[in-house]
Length: 309
Image: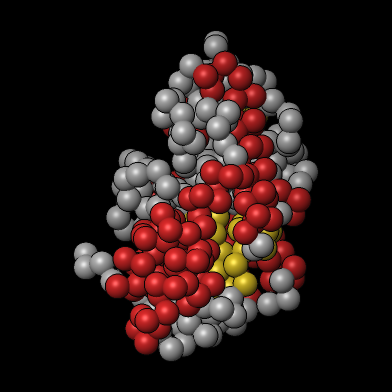
């Protein structure tokens, strides 16, 4: 794929910082799209959501089709805003990350959006929902999706704090707002330059497990399963949530608290808005530990209301 002039600037920005970015892109401003699109969505499977079949065998960033459900919260939000189909540029992809290879990193997805003419004077909203698929400067390369399949279902060893240090679950120790800023700042700077009217919103992840609670549940064809020792996973999710908030504050962008909007409806709730594994009483083919359609509706509606869109 040919690398555009603007994204050579974006790559340089990750090294040189905001001042260099602004100074370097000014001569290229004639290349910027005149109008852009109203809404740009950058994210991972929590932004694409949909059917479990989408996620089978894709690996991290390996599903080049990047299927996106028509009931995902970005699609629902676009419909609530009465946007034309071509006024949403949705580049979210299953397995995407802030900066962990191989493919769908934040800068890669921002480049896709820019190549589609996404950023310009008409751009009102840019959402970024990333962080759970990254390896946060750890020798342990286990990532959340893998641990959901292997660690959480290990009822012998459990998935407690030791799982995050011995390689069975994500290592939460290096998750930080500073690292989040380092990875996402080039994209934020780029959007601010080419879409100066846009609200940039870091979208948090929904309540899967309640903060500080080491318990994790899922509904299945044989009933509700409970992993009482899931502290490695719950701590990791807590740390990613903290990092998103801190990064938003540092960069002066908006944060949508999806946890607050979905509080009380996590996996162990009697009224869960999170899918289990082939749950016959719910969305049988929903991606496990991702929002139900209703959960995505709550997110879309909350963003619309909070930011006066």
